[in-house]
Length: 148
Image 1 (tube, one colour):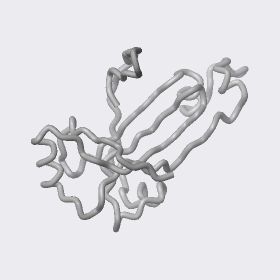
Image 2 (tube, helix red, strand yellow; image 1 turned 90 degrees about the vertical axis):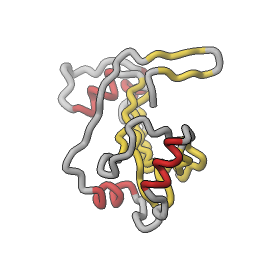
Image 3 (cartoon, one colour; image 1 turned 120 degrees about the vertical axis):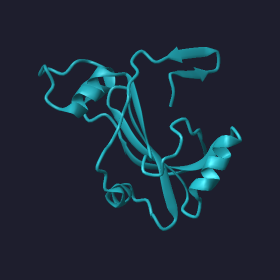
Image 4 (cartoon, helix red, strand yellow; image 1 turned 180 degrees about the vertical axis):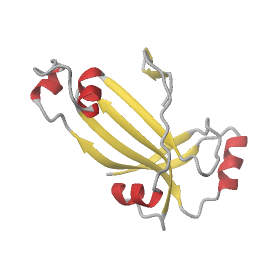
């Protein structure tokens, strides 16, 4: 995630920037909801994306559970990216035809946060990094494998 994303020759600059935080999180519950085995994997980040007016996804980015914090810090200090496995835990396509076309809903203002995010933004992405391990906030993650 970042302020700029390059695709071929086109550069897209984020129009809105912000901060996402989550507190008092039950990590075991999050792993259970996403179907991630904490004995095998250590979730470093969770990506939440709303795109194309209604498509929603949650992807967990994880390293093998045997990975230590010290190993991650060493990779960070060397300026390298941490290789992670992406678990595409949840993918939901637009619920209503109006969402997929980007048309406004009939009932305004909308009543749910999910509707606001789905109808309001063509692409909205959030990344929550694990905070309890006190890893650098600019730790770079590189997806090397995807599990669907």
